[in-house]
Image 1: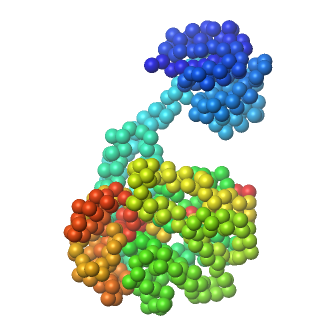
Image 2: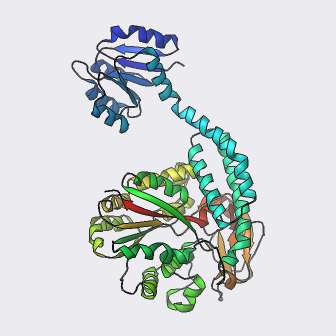
Image 3: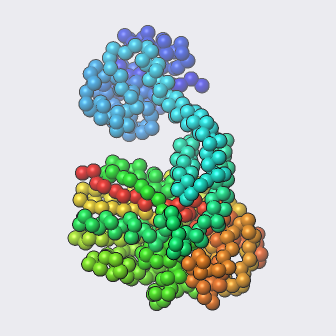
Length: 516
């Protein structure tokens, strides 16, 4: 099928040689002499591209462009003008037009412009695929023989960036990348089993920053310059999701991103309590037993003392500062915070927890509609991007970009798409989470889980409710033998957290400096 081109120019007869040239190249060109006729044809027919003269009698090119974009927002338009005026360049930069050409134009210019527009995505995909395939073996070698925890951050960053680059390309190549991601998580799980306990020792050297280090290593130093500090935790945000948020924020901020590792389990009651307390779970239970409960597994219940734990952290390290804390759970909370965000500029430190991404993860598990909207990782990432674009959080960050502030954005853990089930055996009091378990006498396949018989070595509480723990590896999720097939089918292909994968453990922490 030939590409359909509409060409609107009041001097169209003078362009007849150009049109014949394009028709000989296989394009179908419909010529019109004014904007009104162009709009009428666009309403009736399907075109792949419009050439539009800027200066036409009656409805000029700029006015016609506005009506075209209202009728067909995605239709590429090339503006043809007599001078390279500023507003034409602004329209090009703002993507109202796909390109512009300066008169007089020659046939080869026109042809190159068409090819650039029609073939841009295909050529980009082909180039990206070639570069990825050239680097495939080198990346596989790094996965199979990593040296340090820093290597795993680099590997995860590379895989995630390839995931974004290839998401609109060849499906077969996407599957190759998925397989390489799975291979990486298999090796990462082995690495964690070998190294994690050592990281928790008092004499450990060259270990990554972990959840309890976040305030001390990343946040407190930012308080020294006297600027108001906004510490924002987006619950359950993965690195790939942060990259799409960052892309939207680049207009307003200069952004630098570092990484830290979540503690195990990679679940809110453990990782986020550790962030705000500056302590491992076993130490929270020891020093603040009234602020730590484990028998009630409801996450909102287990994290209802974050504000108190944050106050205790500041009393130990920054006693002169009174921290402010807010948890944003619903639309009313978001709107209220947006309306009064400037009031927080009077506080030296403000911590906000935004729960939407985590809520979306849990909702997708139970909603056929959300599974249809977000059937895979790329679609789920797109869904979170759509939320952020229209969120009060984005509005808040745009407001703060006009102020002299420090902003730190991070997460407490990520999530992984759970595709494989593994059986777990435990008593009736065993916790119900799908990617981690605590209880008594827990048993599971070693290929699918880290089996923790000594919680103290993992700095986890040991009590009558949690004598030992299971941490899921790779993309496994735990299912009991009772009603096995029912829960196997119910939870397959859901996003979960609590386990030991790169997506759950390797977390971005971003520093935003307003550009204005």
